[in-house]
Length: 154
Image 1 (cartoon, rainbow, N blue to C red):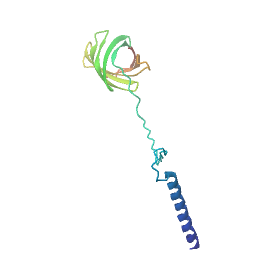
Image 2: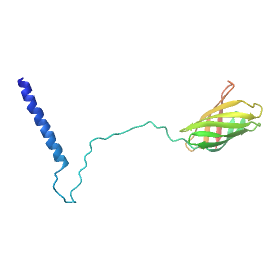
Image 3: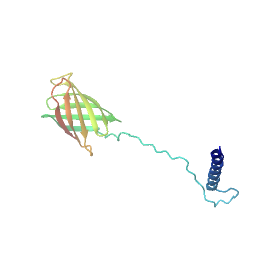
């Protein structure tokens, strides 16, 4: 019991000192002098960190270049991260395209409507460079064929 009696006054003393210190930091009232400096007390600081994806590259426009030995032209329109458009190839290939862009990563699906393979589709998966002038990656045929490289320039 003796230990308790000593701890209660210590707790009360510490609480009083904290209260007096807090009032001291808040400043004294009673002065209407507008030249008194303002006192700002910061009670909490919250820092929020997010892992937001980088802004997506603007890949809209006309891209030209080879996939295998066949030259292609892709005309891409972009609304935020969604891509649409059309394409044509040197051997009479033509069709529509759709896809998305996240940062510098671009994924397109080319759906053939003209040429030797109407109904055929391919997935073009690649990245644009920092200047958004080159788009390189891999084309994967929708029929399970062997992947091939593409290199387009804007």
